[in-house]
Length: 67
Image 1 (spheres, one colour):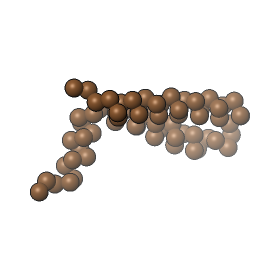
Image 2: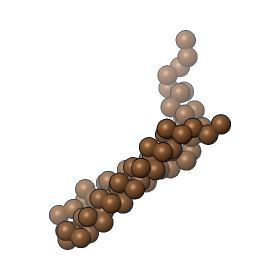
Image 3: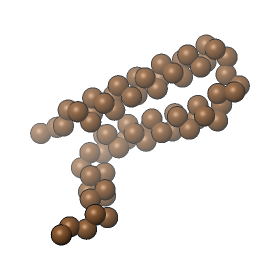
């Protein structure tokens, strides 16, 4: 039986591009959470669009494995 603690580390190294995108997404979500109360409607709309763009890139990286 394999050690489940090893698998996440191996997956993280195998798909570094996906990991980087997910880290960027998390950073943006956390930043939005901290600043949302101070944003204008335009700033909020821009942040939402940026998150949509990053999420689209995450989906693309997750669903199209390199061979």
